[in-house]
Image (tube, rainbow over all chains, first blue to last red; front, side, top):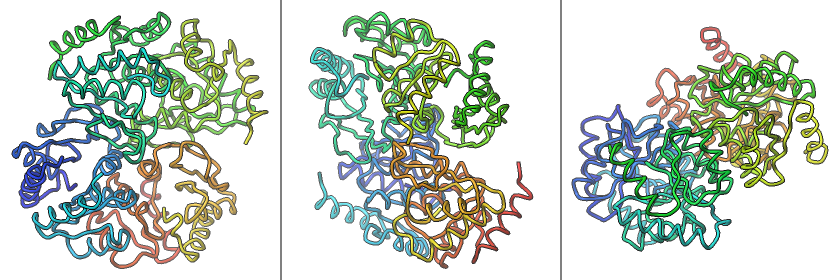
Amino acid sequence: MGPGEGATPEQNIVAFELGKAIAQEGWVTLTGGRSFGVMDAAMKGACDANGLTIGILPTETTKGASENAQIRIVTGMNSGRNYMAVLSSDVVVVLGMAAGTASEVALAIKANKKIILLNQDDVTVRFFKNIGTYKILVANNIDETISHIKEYLSVNRN
Amino acid sequence: MGPGEGATPEQNIVAFELGKAIAQEGWVTLTGGRSFGVMDAAMKGACDANGLTIGILPTETTKGASENAQIRIVTGMNSGRNYMAVLSSDVVVVLGMAAGTASEVALAIKANKKIILLNQDDVTVRFFKNIGTYKILVANNIDETISHIKEYLSVNRN
Amino acid sequence: MGPGEGATPEQNIVAFELGKAIAQEGWVTLTGGRSFGVMDAAMKGACDANGLTIGILPTETTKGASENAQIRIVTGMNSGRNYMAVLSSDVVVVLGMAAGTASEVALAIKANKKIILLNQDDVTVRFFKNIGTYKILVANNIDETISHIKEYLSVNRN
Amino acid sequence: MGPGEGATPEQNIVAFELGKAIAQEGWVTLTGGRSFGVMDAAMKGACDANGLTIGILPTETTKGASENAQIRIVTGMNSGRNYMAVLSSDVVVVLGMAAGTASEVALAIKANKKIILLNQDDVTVRFFKNIGTYKILVANNIDETISHIKEYLSVNRN
């Protein structure tokens, strides 16, 4: 999860590498599905490594979907779809920050998901640790992110 | 789309064969995702033919999901998920009838989807043709259903 | 509940009188909230008799809301809001028929609501009685509608 | 908006006074509608001052609704209802903090609402100002909150 239009070029590069790493582990990359920002970059990376991608779209049709979203779930719910994106994830990785992204972190805490804050600043980490406690993990690079997920799945694989 | 708990054994058999036929065409089978009724049977048929299956779940977790739902979208929206199941489909095939199913047909008409009423009685066909006109097609067996879909996709493939 | 743009002038007149009658009983009129069709007419009638009106809007803002919707619930969910309109009602009165309206009747059956089909044709009544059985009542005018509601509330008032 | 079960006694007292102050201005108090926490206390205060209250419920029925929620919107969407609570508000006042509350602030920023953070700590204010900039106002008591709302409505009254 991460910003759409507001994503920086650096975040998009990390998102691409993250999607690639997720796919190389054999995991599915699920995002908000649109054709820009962290969503698009992560799915592009996943496709690049022959991974499966799912986009949970805010729109009423597939118009505006990323071409890297192989499976397109059309919700017609605008930002209400953030809730579904989070519920449908096993682990939520957060890269970059914006209003929609913050709502996803908060809803993920509420839904008892494990959340990995990747490359986030101190204020963001402190805020979410205040409300999410043990559900919030911190990572400073992709290797740490993948390690966190592996450790979590080794205990919680269903 | 079709009944859950209220599905007849005959409907479940047809659903299984329908899922199989859909998978054999290389298409994706999307249902309400639960572990019983037409949803489960159709996804079981699709899995049997090595097809991809998606379940759009009404629940807040994957509890109660069919083991034949390979991809599980967790909406937390109860029957509100019917709208998303329909929006995420290219063609809606309807087998059996119940309140939830009827809401899906109606929402599919509203969303300008092509709908195939499979093995439906005269009252049902007349009712939905009154409100759905040309969007409503009728099929009396799986071959006719697949033909309708092929014809539709040959014109509307995106 | 009833058609928006597709409502006939006759349906709008009945909707106005229905809203008026509902308000005269001291009940609240809840509709889809938009500025046309049966929704708008029913709320206008209710306002005319100093009743309270609630509009459950499909949009992300109040733009397009009827000026007769005193309370405006903004869902941002498009037709997904039909589910909430039904869940928030004690009794669902249906006047005119269209795809959105049909989805509301079906979702109301699913949610165990009492439904009154007002001035509906034979096919519509038979279709919904098939799936809704005892939950479906039929009325041929406003007096019968109000009587049905009174009888229902005398038993189910919470 | 504020915590449910996790609300402190102090927050509930302020929420009661806030609801009272909102009602005394002739405004409507809209909350998540449940029978505990900040939601319940704010609506109780509003009722105490003869104000109108609306509860946007997460449940499929009115079970669990606060008796102080005069109008009960039943969404059946669980935490997905947070989005609708925010969209249906003119101004969002935030008292106390929890995962659900944080999702509401974030969704309110996304929806371009004016947000007043009441009695919030420094980390919370800094986090939301980072993503919400000018949309975020800060208040340290009820008088400041009411002043912010008045000022906002004087410019934005529709």
